Image 1 (cartoon, helix red, strand yellow):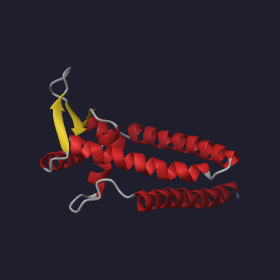
Image 2: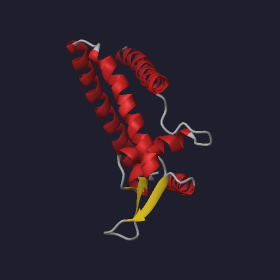
Image 3: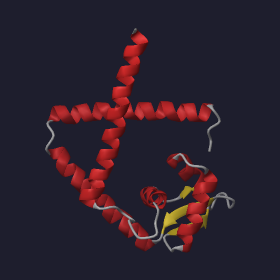
Image 4: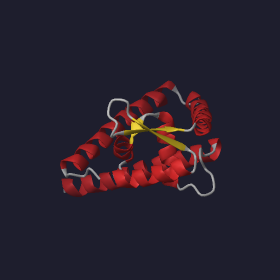
Amino acid sequence: MPESRDAEDHAELLTLLFGSMGRLRRQVGRLAGRSFDEPGLSGAQSEFLRLIGRRPGMSVKEAAAELGSAANSVSTLVTGLVGAGLVVREPDPHDRRTMRLSLTPDAQRIADATRRHRHAVVADALDELTETERAQLRNGLAAMTRLTDLLHEREHSRGGDR
């Protein structure tokens, strides 16, 4: 009987978790706009540009690990985005075999402005939460981080270095 109850609890929790994450992302996008939501850019390209905008200087391998994608897939994204004039590839000064990625200055300005706007939209909503609700959110995010870390460990223990 305990397994059945755990399965029911897990199913309910998974539904709430995935539903909430997707709804939050879509709602923020609707209110604040989507950075790099240009014709011809895929969702994966936009996500990649936002990542590099937040963390310039990443390598393809580091970006792939962060996105949970195969390095060759990210390399293909990079090639297209370099060609579109949105990404710059430069050799690492300490290891010339490694390329470091950054956005072009215009693309970085878009990424920075969009991030500031998205943060402001969410900060306004956070201001309307009670202190108790903000504490609950912090605790929930700590649990989500732990869950993500567990999934990451499983991926790498299975040789999932895609």
